[in-house]
Image (cartoon, rainbow, N blue to C red; front, side, top):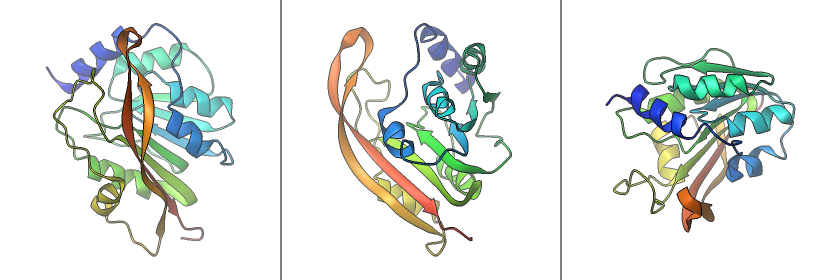
Length: 198
């Protein structure tokens, strides 16, 4: 199975219901002044819809055509695009680039994608990367080893004169999975700010 088929099938199964914002994104973006935002791997669109409702101009991208169609059908001032980030990247510059749980079981040069994302951040803007730090019992990826926020920052190798880490931490969160199952999981939170005037 290729990546597009895998994610299409997953998002077709999840299409029912109202998508919810990721709690970490709400924490990060809640205090910020709205501007232009890019949602990488938007999935069901909960983050994009939440940002748009708060006045952000949102571009949301996903490899899954099913996810993008579902988001478009919900309406709202969102530019939803099917983009395979292994091959392409959306144009434009942004005040916030959000990569929430941007993991895949398929080959992807994640560091290259996130570095490209960083280059699209406007001066004074932020790159917010929230990763799994542990696997929930229902996760498809039980064997993964998740890099720490500081390891992710090191892999990006961004100029320290241009970038500063506002947050780099591991935080517990109570997650709810299929059938209402719950578990405590770890989130790795990295928020990098591009210095103004750069």
